[in-house]
Image (cartoon, rainbow, N blue to C red; front, side, top):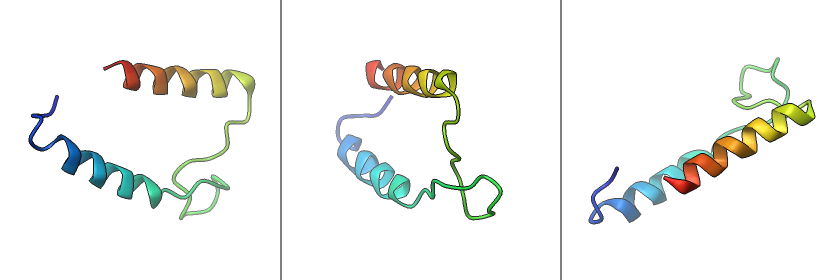
Length: 55
């Protein structure tokens, strides 16, 4: 939960942080998020996003 007076600031900071996330080969040290290699992985990821959006 965030107070409405800081919501936009926090959102902007999160957007900038996630722009820095490297998606790629999970064996590389710089990679933070690997591929969604199975249909179940994709579904679970999307469910998580839906949960976040609903809160």
